[in-house]
Length: 285
Image (cartoon, rainbow, N blue to C red; front, top):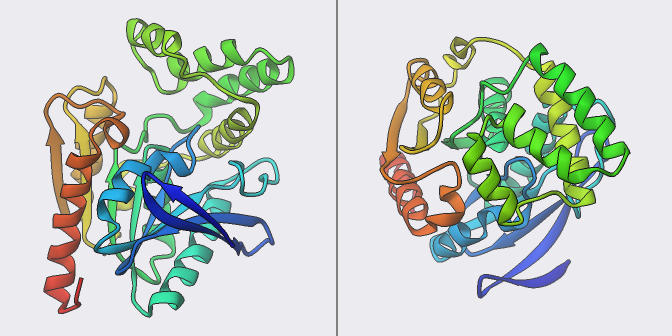
């Protein structure tokens, strides 16, 4: 166990074994009812750091470095959402056993798609679900040529071109914004490039209409920024129409980066949502 500081809050890092033996790193901070937070593609412990720090007085936050992202183990290619679900199930089990209570599951971007799969396919031990802008449009066979091009670029060490491909052809970021992000240094390093490769493998193999999530039984919070580009707004409308126990928030002035740029806003919405769920269940927060 290694001790760290996360935005000023003491933390420690544990390791959990997934069903196939993959070593998963989890950074923990705070006290209270457990929360598992899943980062998006290219992310890591830092992705939820600002939000987690603001919630650590009321909750124990478990920040998972997903399979393929340091310091967790590398995925066995091709990675699938089934592997992601197995990983999350292992951490949900560990968090539930440590606290004796069910876990609030949170995901952003790709991590939100993982959370949807988990809640739909293996909801054991999950108290609630919170999602920030799952890019469900970025799934399916149309990504196979993109995956092949990305793999070739990474193999040749052209991470700048690989990053542009991700922004324009996967995330569908408008070109002017993509240029701003590139100029700001939001590129890939070697390890993040590997994580992205594994995520693309899972996305390319995934499919299904929004109605596949209609069986999710846990209370769900769907969060989005009003300024995020298409097709995200349309995708969120489609998803919202299928989730049976939904509370939805749309933040004016926010983009797909709100979990990093507006941590107070995100933390307050999560705090309110979890308090409602725990109060209705008669569980102390």
